[in-house]
Image 1 (cartoon, rainbow, N blue to C red):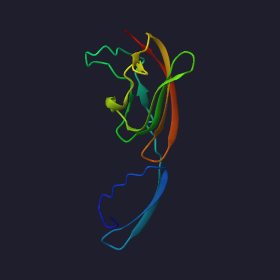
Image 2: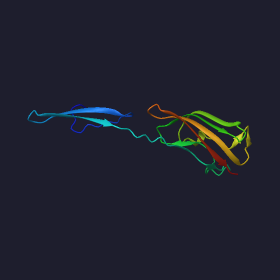
Image 3: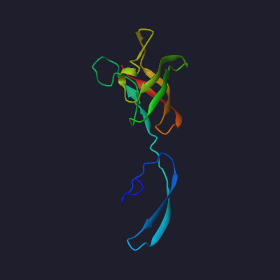
Image 4: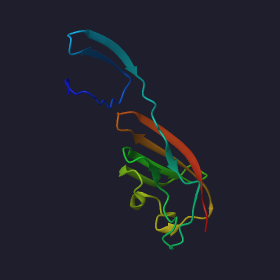
Length: 136
């Protein structure tokens, strides 16, 4: 709104804005402001999970702010074998997570590596990596 007394902006990227004000006497003034954006790029995957069927902590999935899209999420065993993959998931969707099984059989307890390719609302794509413990 160009004539609003209190304009509001919500930029996704750093941006410069110019403002010109005219008072009731016709006097004008202007200013320029540079808006910096500090992005919260936090994405999380649990450091441990217990797929034992009690409906608590049974799935390993990508968590974070709702504006994040999970392009891919992969889990690997200690030998580097891909034991789980999902694509185009919604963040915080545990139904798209790993249930601790591979080829229909429960995986043994231990440390598993994961990587998540995510995309933020502004188009930024990042690859996150980590490890989690499967506890039985």
